[in-house]
Amino acid sequence: MSVVDDLRNLILNGRYAPGARLGEVELAETLGVSRTPVREALRRLQAEGLVEVAANRGARVAQFPAGDLETVFELRARIEGLAARQAAAVATAEDADLLHETAVTLREHAGRRDLDAVYRLNADFHRSLVRLGGSAVLAQSLSALVHSPVLLRTYGSFDAEAMRRSVDHHVEIAAAVRAGDPDWAEVVMRAHLFSARASLLGPRRRDGG
Amino acid sequence: MSVVDDLRNLILNGRYAPGARLGEVELAETLGVSRTPVREALRRLQAEGLVEVAANRGARVAQFPAGDLETVFELRARIEGLAARQAAAVATAEDADLLHETAVTLREHAGRRDLDAVYRLNADFHRSLVRLGGSAVLAQSLSALVHSPVLLRTYGSFDAEAMRRSVDHHVEIAAAVRAGDPDWAEVVMRAHLFSARASLLGPRRRDGG
DNA sequence: TCGCAAGGGGTTGTATGCAATCCACAGACG
DNA sequence: CGTCTGTGGATTGCATACAACCCCTTGCGA
Image 1 (cartoon, helix red, strand yellow):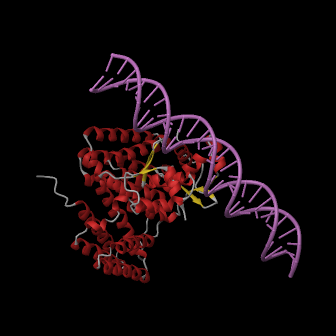
Image 2 (cartoon, chains in turn green, red, cyan, orange):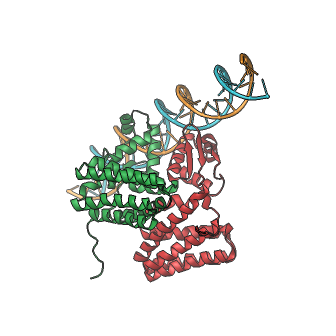
């Protein structure tokens, strides 16, 4: 429907890889509109951090330097930790049950290595949690981080144990929300993201020595 | 120079108050360009969270519901806490000296209640710290929060003691960075923001009772 | 007097044309 | 042979024209 959503999906689905050139005329033809809405969509996605545009030189899909990936997870741990905390503080039993449902379904699909469903349910879970947290600024601060092209298909690099940890974290977070325990919810969420970071980036060796 | 920067400054300087209508033709005339660059600037500022646009109904300056202000400060404490931590971990002595300079100058202007200079130096300080932290994603996550129109002229609502605390926090953060102590830098930054929140929103009474 | 529907003004959404800028390649000069 | 410069093609940036949409007003009817 909306050009900006279409373009965002194209990037997020890997149709345009990080670093790929985004020519205005090519996108306009692909999306079946003129250059004007394409340009506006590119400007929005630029502000979202999904694309980088150089003056007079066009747009490319943004790519994080590897060092920034650490920061992305550190930020997500802090921001989504807050989201989990607030969700646990305000969620009703029905809210928590819905979260639990999603987490359990996610676990089932993970058992069958159905990665597409896992990715979708994972996004659902995190989005629901943020919505429960109830703050628009929270959602916005996160969107730029979780939509990062580098984070796509992260589950592909998880081994069996990491996958098990990840899906169990979701269930545990739902339990913490159900219990109305903000501290519990926050630390599990932080563990969830640090665990994912370790699977993606490998072990963090100590500095000294 | 750039239309998006001009427009952002207009909003941030209070020329357009939160909730004010942003007509495309009016802005185009004000800025001396056509509607096209104005529209692109509005889309960018929309993604930054500074303006809200409704389909076919135009753009307005964004305004947070009061409840979200708590979340904004909670988020800033977490994100800028990370920025301070990373800055302390990597900053050189020269970097720390520059921060100290800014903090001391800020304190002098605050003593004379020169609010314009205070606001500018404060922004400089926080920006420098984030730049020291060295991560583009960090800078981007913050920009949407600190640019929030609601946070303008916050110092106007500070009493003498709160002002003193705020400026001293800057000096202390510089000291922590100079000492290369990430823990110290982070907690002072968190205190800095919680103190500001208290001045803006009043005391947070306990729930129970 | 109140409700509703049709019309008009104004604003946004989109398309297209033109100017400015950038990159690549070729040719000349040292 | 290497480097610099000029020219051509392509792409972006901007302006303008037209179409679509929304809201407000106005007139009619109950």
